[in-house]
Every structure is written in structure tokens, then in C-alpha cells.
Length: 217
Image (cartoon, rainbow, N blue to C red; front, side, top):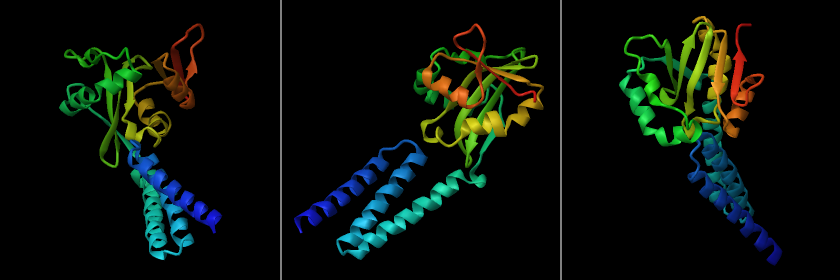
């Protein structure tokens, strides 16, 4: 009896911990995932101790989390890139609001790149949307057939939902239509390097921080 009691209590404790962890997740995906696992464990705990109401309630939470996880990753919830002007008020507000986090990943970023009053910089600026919510921003300067990326930032809530896959793979056709054949990004941040390599970038020969992705084919 003592062993069974301890086992049940540990199971309930584990479920509670997982549910608590889900509440402090910044990522929507991780929040739902931890909530699902925690509710599943707690559901088993409820049935195991003979309280079916607890088991059924948490089984319902499991179903809700599964539904939203499918919705998050479904085609209907795909990212969308909207090209905006460098002077767009919301764009500038978004950058200033997230500037501290932006600087953590892009310490060399200078928002003066958005100053293009004479239009000679050939700026390309995109807001990345997920379910109509602004998830990130990409800023680049087009020079001939090359896009030099100055900022490729996504808020923490959406970083594990495939924003890079969308822009650099799914939506790459829109860049080709603008005559872009190559994308160049500079970084020495290990996490960003890992991300760029995953997106198909390769380190440029004789360089320590320049990564190149060819999209001409």
C-alpha cells in the first residue's frame, strides 16, 4: 500500500509540475506541449486514485491542447510575409518595443538602415505574420541580385513554429520574383549560425561570419 501511495503521489506531483512549467513558457508551442503532457499525466493520476472526474477533466485538457497544436502547425495557420515601407509606423514601433531582444541576437543592428528618404538603398522590409499577429520582421538591402540581410528577428513566442522555413524556403519564390539569386547574412552568434545552416546557408570561403544561401535554382 505504501509503495502504491508513493507512486500515485509522485505521478500527481509530476503532472502538477509539468502544468506549472507550461504556464511560464514564452513559446506558444511549448506552452501547449507541456500542458498536454502534464494534463495527460494528471489524467492517469486521477483514474489511478479512483477520482474519474479529475481524470476526465484533464483528458479534456489533453484534447484541447492537441486541437490547438494541430491548429498551430496547420496550413491554415501558416506564416505570411507582408512587404511594408521602411517608414511604416507599426514596423518602427515593433522594432523599438523588441529592441533589447533584437540586440541580444543582432548586436550590430542599427535601425538607421531604415532611413532611406531618397530611396537609393533599395530596402526590402517584411513583416512576418502568424494568424494575423505580427511574429517578426526581416530587413534587407538588395544590391543587384543579392539580398543582404540586416535583421531577421522573430519574437520568442513564434521561434519554434517554422518562420525561417517559411521565409527562406516556402516563400523564396517571392524573392526570386524580385530578381534575388543570393541571400547573405553576417553573424558570429552560435545560435544564429545553427539557424542559418538549418535554413540552407553555407559559410562563405575565407570568412568567419558571412553566410550565403543561393536561391537561383
